[in-house]
Image 1 (tube, rainbow, N blue to C red):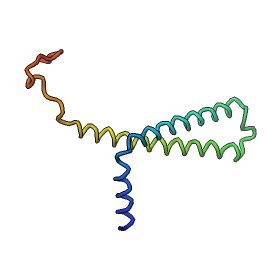
Image 2: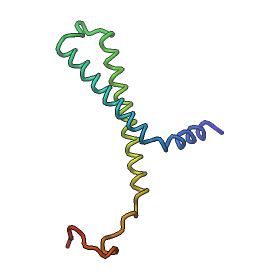
Image 3: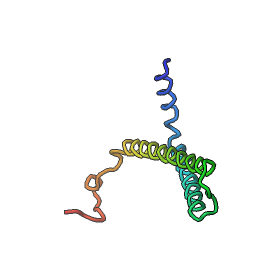
Image 4: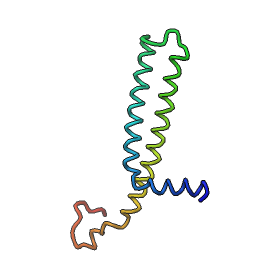
Length: 108
């Protein structure tokens, strides 16, 4: 098995858990966003960051990169999950006129 096939196989094996992984990515994105906002507020108020050195900028950059990675992962997994569930549910509903019932709201 070459590297491409190994990576593709690993991705296919993770697909059943994509919903749980997406939720974890969302939680991580929310936590890093809260940390980033808190950090930026502390810098703006002047509690930390005077002078603005590497010790202040590195945590800010790390939080921003973690947030972008987690949010991107969440968006990719959520869109894939919602698309696959929409495809899976296609054709499940039976039209109202086929059931012989009246629709709650009739469109003319």
